[in-house]
Amino acid sequence: MKFSFLHVAFYLPAALAIWPRPRNLTTGNTPIRLASDFSIKFSHIPKIPQDLQDAVSRTRKFLTTDQLQILLPDRGASLSDIIRSARTLPSLTISLSNPSSQLKSISEDAVAGLGVTDESYTLLIPTTGGAILNAKTALGLLRGLATFEQLWFYLDRMIYTLQAPIQIEDSPVYVN
Image (cartoon, rainbow, N blue to C red):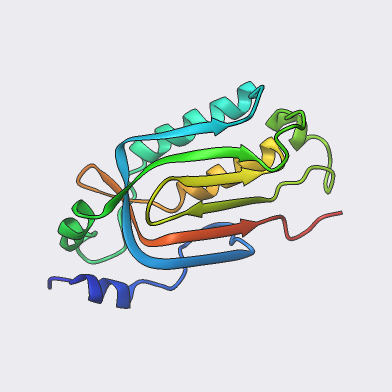
């Protein structure tokens, strides 16, 4: 059975399977794919901790090696033309809510104690232009990178989503 994009949009759930579930998640129905030269870059962060740089490297690698396929009988093969002709996402820009503050490492944030470190983040993936991940701390940026990784499927060397634009605002449910 061959699926058209309208059939796929009808059968796909309204929300992506992201764990843990973000506090606020808004999605659309526009397919986009990562550009072949997709990059993750930092914006106006004077000193980037090594563990955050390592987290970005892991995300880059994960995006190219995960190869998660969409849960359809044909694993998305019928979407090939739609995905191939979709707009591309050139980059993810990582920024701080307060760029003048000293950015601690992820490990320093993680051991600070419950409720001490702000783990919140916002993630915007538009249908045109680049994506933006914004947080107050390195730990918040790590949480946003983990969410970003969960949004993509793989088909024929293309990494894509069918639900752009995507807007996520998240923070821990339980805080001290």
